[in-house]
Image (cartoon, rainbow, N blue to C red; front, side, top):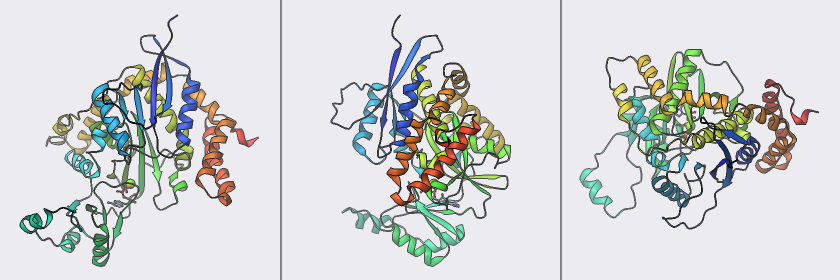
Length: 419
Ligand SMILES: Nc1ncnc2c1ncn2[C@@H]1O[C@H](COP(=O)(O)OP(=O)(O)O)[C@@H](O)[C@H]1O
Ligand SMILES: [Mg+2]
């Protein structure tokens, strides 16, 4: 019998050990997968090392999951090379997420008709270091009244970087004094002023991997380990569907396959505020209960992409979305429904569901056995030890065991550490 076709998946990593170890453990246990045509496949996974590369080198990887290139640029250029020259499948492609930061994402989703709060981009507080600046500014920079813009948007408002992430440089501004202080502090960072959604009912954070989305109740004011609440019915079904559709739209639009999307829900209105996080954190200690789902979804989507030979795309083809967004005869609900169809098509949602049910039918059992094993518990303990000071180890190990244990029990097994 011919050997199974092997597909090498590369992980481009920064400091994390938890989800990569989980991903490796699951791929290792997965065994052979039968493709839609009955052919046999096998996944392999490797952590990518950073070294000089010849632009003509052929990479060994078929797919790369990237959690590094957003701050380390040598591998980012390597990603571009393997995308342009070798058709390597990327989660995510720097071609979309380097150029399409938060500002671009606001623009695109505004044109699609979403309820993005009023947002104004103001010029730099501190000018760029460039010899041409003085002349250019004197000739072309119009003086502007920052306070007047802020008053028009209304206090409180948010001042935040046009390309932000991880709350860096984000300020809730309540009055003129805070406005002046925040703007002074912004220095050479380009800032948006954005109307604040006050008194919202729920903060949703949806993590998407391919066509899978987990909508979680997020509590931004809590410490990192306590931000995701374990809560299954916190949204009306229609609102929940809208939140999923918004995430799918953003991801299909930018071809982001691994992303998180933040929406504030007030009454029946869903306001997307942050949805360009194309390198989302899926750490064990932030996702806890949702961690097994996230790693499993990542294995499933990677398997689907390489086994079905899904072709990576570098272009965005935005016209498909704008034709819907620009159509004055469509209501908001009709637009959402049309985006959902486009999004599901882009991610081959039906084919994926079928693939998961047949080719990967055995994966859930493998995941459950692994998450309830001493191996997983060791990963949990090691992760806590790596992240927290010694005097907190015991409390946090118990905390995360409790949450993961809940997941294990809800899936019909007993966690390793209980007995
Ligand atoms: N328009 C807004 N209305 C209400 N809260 C907001 C708004 N924009 C940002 N925030 C708050 O500030 C936090 C950080 O802003 P966000 O846009 O998510 O930036 P980052 O990319 O740094 O996460 C959000 O999680 C939310 O709590
Ligand atoms: Mg955010």
